[in-house]
Each structure stands twice: as C-alpha cells, then as structure tokens.
Image 1 (cartoon, one colour):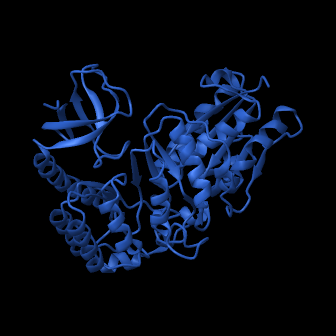
Image 2 (tube, one colour):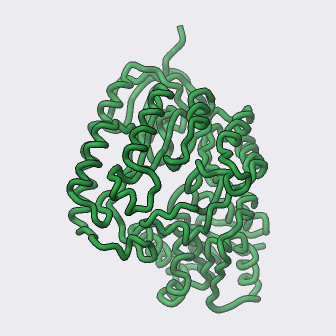
Length: 448
C-alpha cells in the first residue's frame, strides 16, 4: 500500500516500545513507513504526559506535525499515548488539526483505524478510548528502530500503586503482567536480532506475576531469560522497595547475567512525606533495605529517584532527605522538583510550595550528589570492568561503553581506547584511568 506513515515517539523507554509495536504492526499491514514527515500521509505522535514538561513537549510536537498539513502531504494526524488518554476531548477541541485521538487501551487498533482513514471509510475527528485492561498488544510484531546492542523489554503494563503524585494508573490502568511465555518469545526474537543486553521495564518490575500467577515471579522470569545463550546481560529498572525480597537479592548476587544494579525509586526518606505520597514503607525500612543489599551484593550499584518540594515538605523534612543522600552514597540518582498534576490526590493537598523553593531544594541535592559521584568514580580508577561496546564517540577516537553500573540513556558512559577494532555488543575488559565529570575514561586491558 502506497500510504506513508510517520511517527514521533516521546517519553520513556516503555513508550518507545509502544512506538516500535505500532510501527511493526503497520508494516505488517502493508503500510510504508517514512522518516520524512513532509512525505507522510499520516503522522502518529506517541506522547508522554507524566509531568508538566512532558506535556509541553507533547503539545509542541503535535503542532510541529500539524504544519505538514500545509507544507506536506499530511491527511491524518493521530495522537496516542498518555497525553491522548489524559486529555482525549481537550486535544480534539483545542487542536483542530488533530484528526484521531487513540487512548492507551486502544493502541492495538491503530492499523485498523489508519486503514479506514486511508480508504476514506472514516472521516472527521474521532477518538478511541478503550479501558486499558489488556496486554495483548505487546504480542504484536515489534519493529526495532535502532542498532544498539541492548533493547528494552516491557514485562507488564499499568500500575497498582496509588502514589498520590502520580497519574500513571489513570492513564495506563491496573497492573497487568505478560505471561512468561510471551516475554520469552520476544526475548528470543530480540536476541536473534543481535541484542546482547535486555533491560526489563514496567512501572514496577518487582510486582511481576502477582496478578496472573498469584506470587512474585520476577526471579522465575530472570532464570528462564538467563537460559538464552545469546544474551550476555539482563538489567532491571524500577523496583518498588517494599517488594524487593531476599530471593531477588540472592539472584542478583549469584546470577552472572543479571547486572548488579538496583533501580529503586524511593522518592523521599521522611516518614511524614512518604505517607502523604501514598508510599507504603518508612524511612527506616528504606535504610535497612539499602544496607542489606550492599552487604549481600559486593560492588552493587544503586540508583534512585527523589522528589523535592512535595506539598507540606518542611525544611526539616528536606534536611532529612539531604542528609540521607549524603550518607547513602547512591552511585546514581535522579531528582525532580514536584510537579502539580491535575487528577492526582496531591493536586488538592494543602501546603504547595513555590517553584523557587522546590527547584532550589532539587539543585542543592544535585550538588551534593555530584560529590557522591566524584567519590564513586575515584574508587573505580585502576579497576578493570567488563564493558559492553555501544559504539564510537563523536570524536572518532574513543569507543563508548557501559559496565554493569551504567544503564543506557540515563547514566554516564565509559570512554575507552582499543588497539584493535571492536564491534557493537562486544564485551571487553576496560581499565579505568581517570574520570571526566560524570563519565569515566579507560583503555582495553590487553592480556599478557
């Protein structure tokens, strides 16, 4: 079919997976895909709407695509993803250039929707908003859009946590695990395409299996994925602290394919703020958990995310968080100033703080974290790490790669030289020579 489709993908890796599924299903239906949007008959904008900045980026991307109705061949502009689920009617009303809005529960219908539009069997503005209650669309063909040696693999959709600052359960529905068989099938396909590292993602990977198997099944899944011989690494993202147990910690310690890397979004350390956030644990529990992980997994890299300026956060609450970050020595840390999002319980809470205070507190912790990173990087100088080659740096001199302690897209990288040419996905021993800000610099260690 000579009907060209373009796609704009925004947001997190989970959204990227959705975009690749959309592209794969459209290609299977005979549509022609194009990166030249001025030639596209239809453009899909897959949006994010987690916080204010993401919403602004989404709206700008929609408007940018809309101009091709005047400057290109564009006939149908489609908006999908979280913004579409959150503001279905508003998008059609406020941006009349948009023809179709497709909610997160209707992604699997996109090929049919576009075919009907292409055949003029459907006209005018439309929106599709099925309740997000299935993961069947994740079994559709996925078109990988990069040549990385790693790939993200979504093991579940939705979330059952009810954090008061978060809109995700309303946009993505309740937690829905994929079956182990479904995940293994996709994992084998990714490995056959040359992917050496799989990064398991969900809103909370530690909840995996509770809904369909009646028990936490993440370790079972990891064990089966580890049997895929082509895979070198498995990495976990987004582990809810209260669901991390001894079984998972032991698997990380003993499984050579599972990266010794825990991403544990804790958000805060003050009991009062944790309770207001709807988090189930306490500051004491978090500290005990982190100490236990470090004691049982030598060399583990810990990453977390935090929120400053949550409604009602006092200077005392913030100071507790600040001191905790200084003491914890997180190897990786991301931090956000609280974003007031309509539709969340926190939106109506009392005690909202000014932007200046929220961002000022964020910046103070980021400055403190820079010292944590400096100490961590200094401790790695002279050490040798198995490093996966991600490619060549822009200067054409250094290779770029990652040890177990670096997740792509969010963490620093290791720049290194090699006396021999290297291919993407190769695993090489790299000796760290020095630090360059957050990044490290090294050289391939030649065996004697």
